[in-house]
Length: 125
Image 1: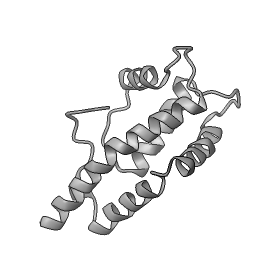
Image 2: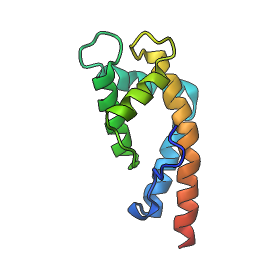
Image 3: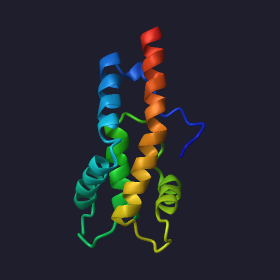
Image 4: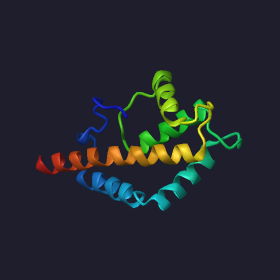
């Protein structure tokens, strides 16, 4: 989603930390497990319980996700709007659960190789 941005700075991690993140991402690589976890997070971040995420709720979700994964990605309004537009497949200006599940699945598929590369670089030090 953000090709060209160095999202993972391997100097911020120990080998064990990277391995733990990779293990966690691999655990949720199972679609059923991932969909369940995303549904739980969706409920938490849908702060007004209206059944969808608006831009503010999505930004909160992304902020927590980036922090937990120690990813470097600017989350200004331009980026949030871009991600929102990417996720909102039916263009109804709402992020519904199935849209978020699809996005997170694709995101994990793209970010996992970056962690694997960071792990290889860290082990080579």
